[in-house]
Length: 71
Image (cartoon, rainbow, N blue to C red; front, side, top):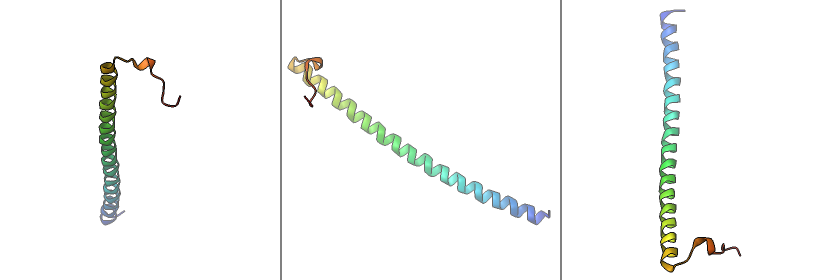
């Protein structure tokens, strides 16, 4: 194999490696955005739960005494 052929092969492999790196970067970026979305949703749910607990404690009720909404 000539030096030119070897250089061409290395260039081809480099292009493939760059493509894989770009694809992995896209995946990592998507996962990061999804994790941020889930963090925001989790915080919203935690805040709702705290509000609910505060409302129940202010009304003197107990969550265990309440019937689920489907009854």
